[in-house]
Image 1 (cartoon, rainbow, N blue to C red):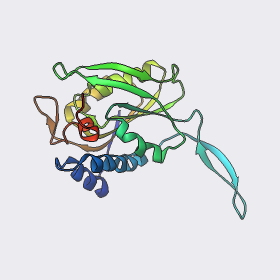
Image 2: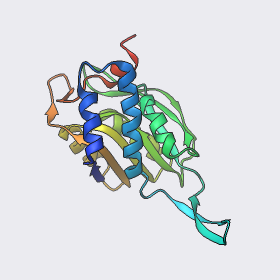
Image 3: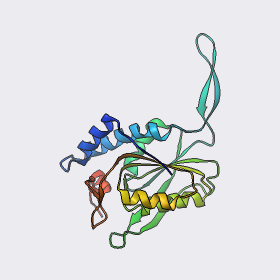
Length: 211
């Protein structure tokens, strides 16, 4: 697994405001979209392209276009939805699938409660959106789900990660083509499985705590 931790000062600044417990939900949502747009540039560095010829006002020019089949963007519900607009700003022609993963707060194990994905992902580049890589269970299960459907090239984008989750994901993806792009690698997990210092529950801060 390839891991890239972004160290751009704009990303660090936006992350600092995002972490602030006093940042209200509207600003939090806007910051998440801005962060993911920045992180997406790194995540799509190796997006597949094919030659494309156009006519400029002066002469023909051969550049590139996004190759087909177009990439598939997969936000993990519900918090991953807050990352979708930022990603689609960079890859507007991508298709979108959905995967509902929830963490049991007692066992910390992931469960799948919904999915809307193609049955065959062979030849598709997939970009998974999940704000927090904490224990690694949910994201690991999501990646496994995609590989079982035939995906062979998957990039995950996370705002924050804990070392424990990173270690588990590295173990679970041995031999698979996985890239992980992070806004920051934090200190640790606490006894409740939350990232420290982290930013709290990303889903609640994006959308509120309605059950």
